[in-house]
Image (cartoon, rainbow, N blue to C red):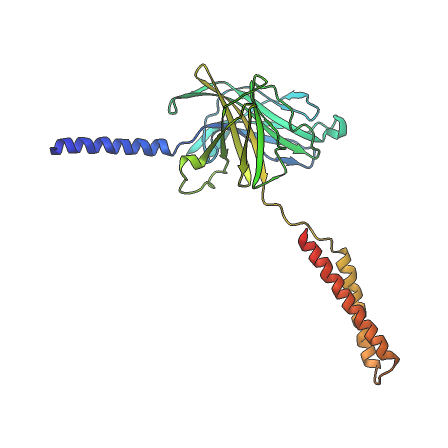
Length: 324
């Protein structure tokens, strides 16, 4: 092989490696929500950012047009929400996005306690770099005091209905959901799962693509499951390709940090400690008063036994607290 041929082949191989490197670092685009609060304690406005990009890497792009955005309330009724244009900054610069706001409806039964499902439908968007057209239908559940309505359907053309309550989850829990297309279970549908990381917090260097965007499939009833192995926000997207358009139902799930150990009720310990201090004072007084063996010695022995009993009680309470 002559030098010119070797040089040409080397150039081709270099181009291939560059292409592989470029395509290897990309992951799926998703529309997703970032609410101020996933679990609300007060009936105040909850602002929600709506972003288009790579949740894992924190790379954002100009968001596609929203055709409808609203909230399903705990009683199943809907309110339409108004969008505000905003700018968000990702790892590779700024991008246009949206913001909406909703407040729990205290005019409902039980003062509006329950779950509020934010949802948004987007126009189809063709992404030339990926050679694909995506049409997203996104939803997320925000909890407000009561557990009512988390499994309500939004009626979107494509949606994931949670079969596992999508909050109050600890890392390591298994999530189960059902994919619906036009209200009917969608069998053998691809479901992608990707973890969201705030800008600047993704792993460096990034893992291989299969570790960024995971995938599973639905069964004959449109049901799927996967393990939530880290705390934070998870983006779950089910796809149905119709006329070369990938119609996606996206559900977000919030996972808590490892549950903290139960708080110890210290009232019993405090009371016993006070009794122990009093008994110790009496022992000290008796030691000063006792010079010969007599009745006082019997009293001293009784007090020592009482102190031992208190110490045993304290040990029992402490052991019980550790088991909780």
